Length: 212
Image (tube, rainbow, N blue to C red; front, side):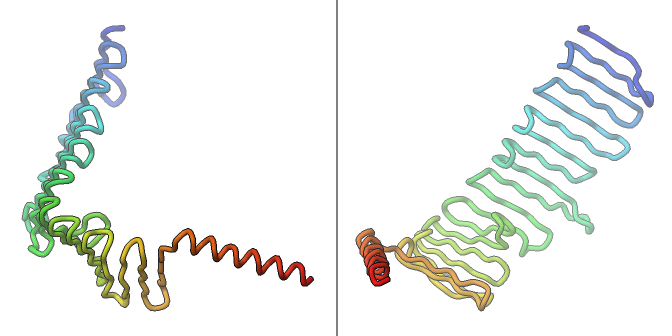
């Protein structure tokens, strides 16, 4: 039917229109509306929360009490406000990949960056801290006490801190070592050298077989 109304279980009033496309449900503590697949919203008075989706996951809005979050195209445009236990409202705004900004209660947790010109990020991209100036001219990442500094990323760089050491001149040569837990090396070898080495191996194997 084009329109169907009625009271469902637990006193929930339901309205369905245009088949499965438009639905509306309402109780004493919450109400829900959907125009599938374009729009969806739900508001819970008892939990003091609300949610709005527009062509999910293109645009979403979530709120619980004083904490709220809005994002567009997942994390292309992201805006969030969260109140801490002390009552301070922490705010974060991302316009990926150009602008990253966060105002935190503790100054050391705040950050600001305008890519690719300059910036300092905290707890982003699986790193505790990321600093850059005119990317890729200079990039520094920190994960715990381990620091990776790059110049003209990814070609030149060195590693320090956390018991590690090393450098790289990519793709020619590089190494990174950390105590006994990590030992990485790479080197670029010419095709002529590789072919010559393979020829020596084949000749040695042939001589060995003839001697047998």
